[in-house]
Length: 265
Image 1 (cartoon, rainbow, N blue to C red):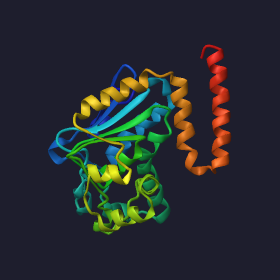
Image 2 (image 1 turned 135 degrees about the horizontal axis):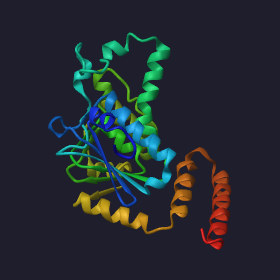
Image 3 (image 1 turned 45 degrees about the vertical axis):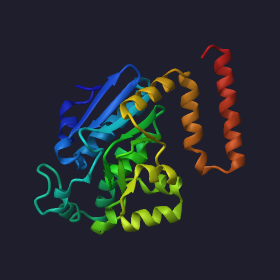
């Protein structure tokens, strides 16, 4: 068991999870295939997210990374074959569902990419090597994206006749704007970490990824937890507010923080 999750759920999705102090580390763990994703991967990620939402005291920082030389090559290509992936529905089988049931299945997949900005912990994507398609969307799901100079990113879905559907278009458009997001998604071209930083979806390009992640986690954990929790909510919801509404939210959050400080919280 890891965080009260059955080991078989994680193993079936090729996901590892560990905790050290206030830091949870989630690793996509099929390095020989560059950490491809399947619905089982998303089930495992969603289960971890649900636990972190139900028990927010577990962690203050959540790090998502890939084992080996890649972050994630994206959707497992075998999903496109008639045989699919053993034990999982192929894309062909999924399309036999009704529109309602297929949309419901996709909604379930998306949960693996939505909890990262709902939990009070700060989520960090630690990217080295390729982050393609679903891998790119998983990195975009996090609050912070750290990348080595060797990291590469691409939205490859349209190359396969699909659209990005794992909740990645909103953070991408937010980070780079409509025009650049359109160009990246429509062409599927590969973007370097340096270009991603200039565009705005990469937070920092670092030399030593482990060191950078450790330093960030240490800095976050050194701050009062109530302040960081209030900040994540304040910033995450800011895009849905006008400037006046955001100022009001700031006032409300600060009132709560001042009262908490004066009461020793």
